[in-house]
Amino acid sequence: MKIVYINTDPPSPGRAPSPGRAPSPGRTPSPGRASCPWRDAISQHLPEASFWIWDEDDFDPADVDYALVWNPPPGVLARFRHLKGIVNLGAGVDALLRDTTFPGTVALVRLVDPLLTRGMVEYAVHWVLHFHRDFHTYARHQRDHLWNPHPNADTAQRKIGILGMGALGQGVANALTSLGFASIAGWSRRAKNIAGVQSFCGDDSLEDFLNHSEILLCLLPLTDTTQGLINAQTLKHLPAGAFFINAGRGALVVDADLQAALASGHIQGAALDVVNEEPLSPNSAYWDLQNVFITPHIASLTSPLSASAAVATALHAWENGAIPDHIVDLNAGY
Ligand SMILES: NC(=O)c1ccc[n+]([C@@H]2O[C@H](COP(=O)([O-])OP(=O)(O)OC[C@H]3O[C@@H](n4cnc5c(N)ncnc54)[C@H](OP(=O)(O)O)[C@@H]3O)[C@@H](O)[C@H]2O)c1
Image (cartoon, rainbow, N blue to C red; front, side, top):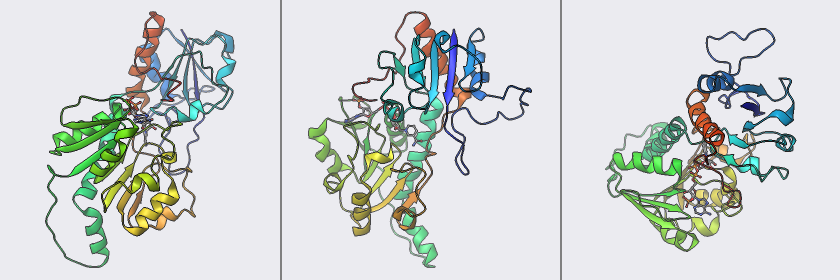
């Protein structure tokens, strides 16, 4: 089995390591061959495989069976003429599918990994609790030297809406249920049967779903149909004083509309891990909004050590003539 690894996500100051570019702790790179956590991790599962790093190793593209990719440069994947499968080393495939030369006849698997889900659960639970328990208000009170306790909201009554009930949305819903949140709604294309979660599906149900969502958490993929979904029209259906948490993709949001809703107080507060333009421009209005909390796309990061198990499972399936789990529907875009 011959694998090429393509990852051009540049590590930038302040950005957590992208999948696979960080040096592994305690390992000294051998002269002439840089350490690659993905190569090390994959070799644990597939010792017989050849693992080539694009732009570093010498190999014939025609020999490559599988590509493991994160943000490959446009046009590169089309050079591997005998690919049997592509694995995206993250959950979102929107950047990959923007490449007009993407080889649409090759099956693409996206990453579903317990550690990736756990990262998102931690991020989402943090912000849901933050808004639910009014910590944003107490932070403001501290700045104003105010000691002003008020009653805690009832967890069982708090209405939470999760846009996107896939691997991440379901993980978050289950964690919130276990904390006692008993009024959770989930929105997806197809109906779901998840204990403790009211399922809303399809565009016709969106308004009712939004009416329900005092805390709205977005875990949708970015596709042609979800782009700009959070706009003035949809935001107005949220209850007055709602909160918005976005860990899906920045382009799901029309920034001017969200900023207007934040300025008017219709949206009381927001936590944004993803924004339209990343990194967020130093001139963005978001930085200075008192009721907005920004993180630099770190809600959940891929760990080669953990995720290599899922990658190896997919490659084994292909090698055995089976269809791996988590195949991307190229028409739906996720
Ligand atoms: N911020 C971060 O650090 C970070 C990290 C990882 C992932 N992400 C983002 O999180 C996204 C979700 O990941 P995932 O693994 O949970 O994806 P997933 O398993 O593919 O789930 C996607 C969910 O969105 C729903 N959906 C898609 N299009 C829809 C539409 N038009 N209307 C209604 N529902 C729609 C799907 O509905 P069905 O269930 O009916 O198919 C599914 O429930 C990724 O695509 C990525 O953008 C962010």
